[in-house]
Length: 300
Image (cartoon, rainbow, N blue to C red; front, side):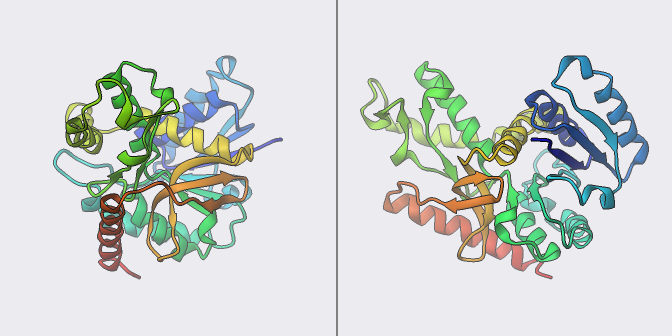
């Protein structure tokens, strides 16, 4: 099946999404757009010249109007975080950008993938501005936090991260929730894993929550891991894999945050209720409240 992926924003993150998408082979055509036209042109040229090293795909710049025919549009446009700044601190400036883009995407028939931070609030804002159904506006949400959690637990337990089955839900940010009660290593509950000490939970969750800040302090941004995350999400959508991913979407309570969901060509097909204890359920409710309040601060 031929698929066209469009990326709006060709900064560090957009460029990493582009190269990861090309290597994944899910797009036959990759369209790039940026307010800085020359930068988008340069990225398209640079990526196209590597065509001998990834599955066949055409790469070119495009207007947003041309992108309306794409199967999926990835939004990475916006300001990046700086050291000491939370994702919610980015909100007001990036909200203006997303509102303008959403108004240009009214009537779009494909899937919108939101990456720009704070991704949860901006996912909800994109639904409002574009008028698209919530299941077709998907934020990368806590996919990255979940990946960071698996990598951190792999180091802790000396196992391959692929063998760690656990989820981070709620906000992609300070109020995120690690669902410790449902963590499995292979099919073994974490609580019964030899040598596991639950006293490590707080420090590991803190490492996951602050991972981006530590990277930003050193190199100014995070880009490669989120590029891989986004390409994985695109593959799930465009190949209609119906995989279970911790993505952000506007939930039944009207707030956008991450929960495990079945994702395919139609977008979020179903949201799943994960295993949670009472404390985790309370933390998730708090995370939703944080995001509800943040949206109210910029509510159109």
